[in-house]
Length: 295
Ligand SMILES: Nc1ncnc2c1ncn2[C@@H]1O[C@H](COP(=O)(O)OP(=O)(O)OP(=O)(O)O)[C@@H](O)[C@H]1O
Ligand SMILES: [Mg+2]
Image (cartoon, rainbow, N blue to C red; front, side):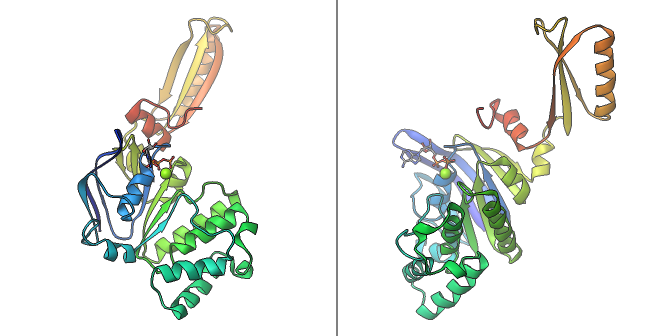
């Protein structure tokens, strides 16, 4: 359905996408996970024909992004990372404006706008200027603008940035229901927990390169543990000559208790105990040697 072959893109001498190969199947809720600047938006913008690749080829439903941009535009919906709504207009007027840009008939725009505004719980507020909306309401409007032409493939570029928990959950439920309707969804985020919660398959990218690809459980399965404890201990509480025991594998909790007892029996001081569960953050660390987020 979406085939990306050997895609590269630079801005000046800054390489943003580096020889990316990726195939996304119909009906997937596909996660695109990467830290800030990894190349997520650049990829999404190339897929949506807004940016031209330097090298490589991309086809969506058999259409080439360079040669068949019009066919591609009508089958995809882009929910951009930057809000693309007019603050002085009402939600209703925004929908009319974008519907016209897609060349839809007035009656279709109206019926679809009513359906979508109800879908995101904005119908009651449809005539208010958007500048009076909360961040979450603006995000919801931004989303349905990308859906007005009923696209089969939807790109969500960080749709939850700057929204409160309630709106975030709302957006998640929306995405799930679009997925259940059979839409193919590509979801980019730098929030690991979101991707783990939502996506059927995940590509992790870093500096424009694909570093891991699979379901969340396949990716976590690349690690040597499901969960592990690390005990940091030393002779005294100055933490000098600190030693570490790592406990992983079967029966971690029983083994933890045993190890703690032994350390105590040898009159050593426990400085810290760290618990780690296999997750995509650990997968990123495993592949790159770096933390996903610098704390
Ligand atoms: N218009 C531009 N001009 C120059 N450099 C750019 C431009 N757009 C992006 N870049 C650079 O290209 C790289 C990839 O950026 P991109 O926006 O695709 O990343 P991202 O994964 O979407 O990041 P974020 O999580 O911050 O949205 C970054 O190093 C970025 O600074
Ligand atoms: Mg981005």
